[in-house]
Amino acid sequence: MSTPKISIRQMFSRAIAFSKASLKDSENLRLLVVLSLVPIVHLIPIGYFVEIIKKNPELPLKLEKSKWTKYLVDGFLFGIYLFIYMLVAGMIFYFSILVPLGILVAISIVGKIDYSHDIFNILMAIIIMIAGSFFILLLLMGVPAVSISFRTGDTSKLLAYRELWGMAREIGLLKFFALSIVLYFWWIAEALFLVGGWFGIYVGLFYLLTLKLEGVFLVLIGPLFLILWLFLWIVFAKVLALLIDVKYPASAYQNV
Image (cartoon, rainbow, N blue to C red):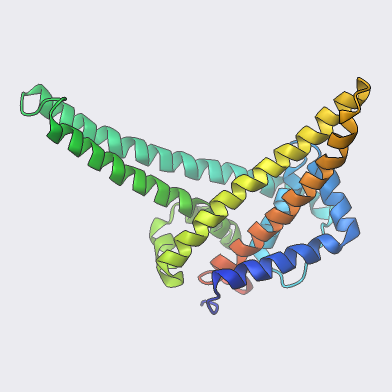
């Protein structure tokens, strides 16, 4: 079962509209900002975003207090799953270079090729390029893989490379990887706004305690950074929800 394909522009247009609507709820926004203030506790909003990925709702979700523990666990697991995926990708990259390098070194030891020889350098460059391309490919599949795992409730989907590749082909390889690259840098921007928000609030409070006026500006700008983090994360979650809907429609996994 699959859903109709939509363009990248449509994905982001719908995601931005959804994010704006989500943050128009003043109670929701206030709770999300307060929970985002404290490291570790900020995993609750991340778990809320994961719920968006899982359910792909048409209307904004309410941040239900009865689900805070669930949100906290999901937010923590999202980070852990992503870390495991990156670790596996890194190990594959490491061994895909180490094994060919070991073979080349073994050949050089028996006198067939010299380290300074052009052929050796060319072969190493080719190996690094292939391994590096494969590593980047795996990284770009990481966030969709984790999202599919949460949508389906099946952790084996984290390493279901064949299924991921099939989904990428169904969506369109160019579209899939272009969107994955955008999401990767979007994710970095989210992290910067979160850290910027924490920096503004905590350093600002410290400055205020030491009677430095700069603290007023930082304390005011900190929450704005956190609101931007929330906005970007909700867009990120909604785009992912729409992306994986092509292969794994949310309607088929409502009971997960």
